[in-house]
Amino acid sequence: EVQLVESGGGLVKPGGSLRLSCAASGFTLSYSMNWVRQAPGKGLEWVSSISSSSDHIYYGDSVKGRFIISRDNAENSLYLQMNSLRAEDTAVYYCARSPPQDAFDIWGQGTMVTVSS
Amino acid sequence: EIVLTQSPGTLSLSPGERATLSCRASQSVSSRYLAWYQQKPGQAPRLLIYGASSRATGIPDRFSGSGSGTDFTLTISRLEPEDFAVYYCQQYDKIPKTFGQGTKLEIK
Image (cartoon, rainbow over all chains, first blue to last red; front, side, top):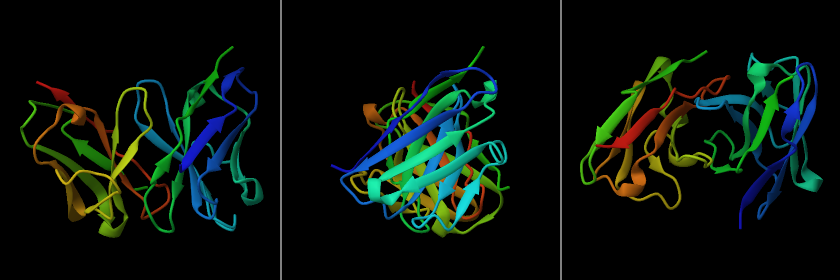
């Protein structure tokens, strides 16, 4: 079964850091991968994308300079290092797969990040 | 940044009726790079339509997408009870890969 499973969410204080992981199974991680977040009761917000070989990396303006996306294809895993966290980063974070130049066809179940003192 | 505006914000219909959801872009989007997603409460989004009009794997043919340039439409021909959810459009033509704010399809 093709599946993505996120982990690493939790409660963190403002200014703190957290590292999210996304484990892929049922397929090799030879796709572009993405992080998308959804604040409580709100819509979807694209956060970051990374190409299959990590040579193209992009961030949304709201996280640029604070978050770092990375991947380990040998481990079939995607990561999001989140630094200098703010209350407005509170959201469910989803990882999603995208074939080259294509839509997000497989999504994980999400992991909740809460930034609060 | 390409801003996607979805309308209406909420659509109240009955099972069996036809639903028409709109997504308007602030600048032209290649139809190759416009998608629609369905999200139910407590669940991850699910890809319905990619490339503006191609159905994703396993999506029933009552779902169809159309449009080009700045105006795109998702049509559900005959609503089933399981279709009541929130729908999002997304452009993946340009960075940032923006989403619309969503249309909530509710049972009338």
